[in-house]
Each structure stands twice: as C-alpha cells, then as structure tokens.
Length: 500
Image (cartoon, rainbow, N blue to C red; front, side):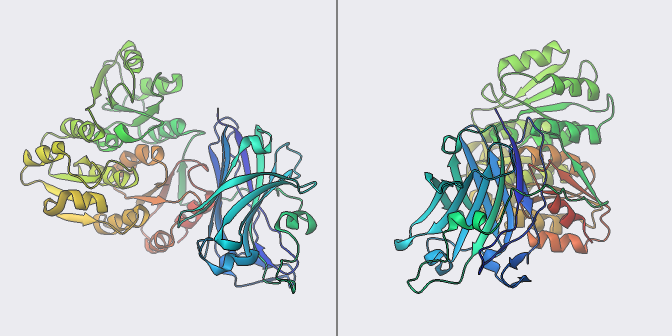
C-alpha cells in the first residue's frame, strides 16, 4: 500500500556555514503518492552568518526526491557540484554533509534527523537519530550514483509512520575548532540553529505554455492522456499494458499510434473499473483491444474481462520481450519504411525509440542488450531496404553495420534531445516525460507523436540544462505537454520547460 508523503525543502544553517535555501514544493494525492520531488534553480546558497548569497556550488542543492513505502524512506538529492563522498576532499572532516529532518506525527516538528557524512578512512555513513535527545536509532544505506546522493532508511527505524514530512538540505561548514572537530554536531544543527521545519508548502505556478497531463497514479495519467487525445468512440483500437513492469509494454506506443488508439494501463491480474470505463468511452462495441505481453504481463483474467465487455482481445506476445516487440511490430505495420531499435533491457532508450517510431510511422524493435537476438536478425532479413535507426549505445553495438543512423549522446536525457534536434523540424508541441520511470512516457509517446512533436526525457527533480536551453530557443513552440504529475516531475521542471 502506498502512503501519503508531503515533501518540503527548507533553509537552515550552522552559524558559520552555508546551506541550500528554498521552501516550495508540491503535495501529492493522499492515496497514491509514490514520491514527491522538488527542484530549484542554481544559486540558492545562503550564509546565515553574513546573510548573503555565497558561491558554494558543492552545497547548492538542485533537486530532492523522497519516496515513502511500507519498507523504507528513500531520500535522493542532486547538487550543482556532484562529488563522490568516498573520494572527494569536500566531504572530509564533515566539511559537507547531506542532512534531513523527518516529521512522523504531523505536528510539523521533526522527530528524527538524518545525516550523511564521510568518516575517517573514507567511509560514508548515514545515521538516523532522535531530535529530542540525539539517541541513535539506526544506520541508513547510503550511495552515490554519479547523478544523485541517496539515503535509504528502513521505516521500522522511525516507527513505521503512515505519513511523513521531510526537510532536506546540504550543509557546508568550513570552520573547525583547533583540534579539527566541527563546530557542533551535524545531528544538532537543525535544532540548535532555530529550524522548526518541515516548512510550509508553496506550490509553484505553472506557466501558460505548459499543459500537465496527469492523474493521481500512472494508471490515471494514462487515462488523462487518452482523454486529451480521443473523444467518444474515436479510437481505432486500444493497447492495454501492465502498469507495474516495462518489458512487454515497451513496444506498445508505436502500435498505439499505428492503430490510432491510446495506451492504457492496469495491473496484471485485473482490469481496473476506471480503465474499463475509459475503454468504453473511446472505443465502440466490437472494437479491438491489444494486450501487450503474455500471461505474466496480463493474465487470462484480464483477457476474459476485456472479452466480457464485447471487445476483440488480441494478445501480442512472445517468449521474451524481444519477440513480443517483434510480434507487435508485425501487427503495427505490414510494410514499414523505418524501424527504430533500442535496448530492451532498459526502458529509457526504448521510450525515445517508441516515440520516434510513432512520429515516423515506423515500428520498434528491442535488442537483448548489446546482443542482436535471432528474432531481430530474422525480422531485419525479411525487411530488406528498410531504414534502421539505433537509439543508444547498446542498440548500436547490437546492430553494427545494419544501422543507418545512430543516436547516442551518452545518456537517455541527452539522447532524447539529440533526436528532437535531428528528427523534428520546428515542432510547435513538445512532450516531456520522466526518464527514470517508464509508464508516463509510454502513454505519452503516441500522444505527442500525433502532435508531430518530440518526447524529451527529464529527471524527476531537475530539467537537464541542455534541454532547458534548447527549449528556450524554440520560439515556435506554443505548448509543452508534461506527462505525469508531481510524482513524475516537479512544477519547476515544467516552468523551466515552458519559459522562453
């Protein structure tokens, strides 16, 4: 069961230090909050000793996400200057630390503090302590991905709360006592320096050029995207995919565009009533519903429910995700002129491929990582002369000389921008989806393809600067469609995307 989470990013500081300062965020729906994110432009570092903004990029927090599940609370933070705490000198002797306070009983007072520091010998640890007496409760799992600092706290460590609020900050303290210790303990900073967070929630205002297509969950977001595009009984067919896992669903977006229908999502063992209602709205009796994947993706009970609604249920599946994608491609287009190929083991490049295939009126195939599956080779051999586009390094390696065009900019976010620059001429509509989760981009790809626009991928907490800069030059763009709610991307991302 998903739990409610309200995230706030707050300002606090040691007397001689400088920390991130901000106080805006969003509050997700009560029943379905999977995470909450906040992002901020660079330069929000206050030195409370001098009451001035200072240039301390190592302490400038650009984005924060907090996930709350039954098992753990995970805090992810992104700074303007990313350093590996295990190797970077700025983390030595607690010069820099990631901190958080957590309110677990809704009294707007922090019951627990979390601190992430580098200890002697290069060790990096997170400690969870009570704020009233500084008693240690547990250690937390810590990591640095090269993109984010991550702290993972078992919920049992903080009393298994149903609701939490969190204030997150990076603290920079350059002053030390003669013996080399820090002035004060990291645990005590939020309380000793007068912080009473978590601070108030101040939602960002989305600019007029931006339209967010979202619902309180990924299932509802797919429905909202469907409602944006299709009126009553106007869909040619429906593509139904599993909402919780991506392998069999990855090729669904190009099929949806080909059959002029939406991608809708449900769980693997039942058809949600709300989804069934949306199906009845867009598709007349006797229409076709394509089930993406085998019984592990959508089991026979879902297929039977679809048939009981009077629809023709067609399952497109193979022994693997690669062969499922091949089956979908064969139905999507009999004689396609273009095939777009991406790694089937990851989803981000495949989202870009599905969107581009939809835009070009082509089909999509998936590789087995950097290996070309026999099903791929057989399909390509049976379509001589077809234009082959590879998305990402793995697909490039798998295809070798078979690829006529390769788009690989080193990461999916940058690759999505490269595709937009090369394959789209003066688009008036642009789509943005979370590149770290698959469902919103999957449902959004055929929607943005119908508007002849590219799908750009973003982190949930901060819009990649190169995408932000490119969008600012696209004066012909009149609409930016954000696929997914605050769980998927913060309002600040959409504001950045919509700003000319």
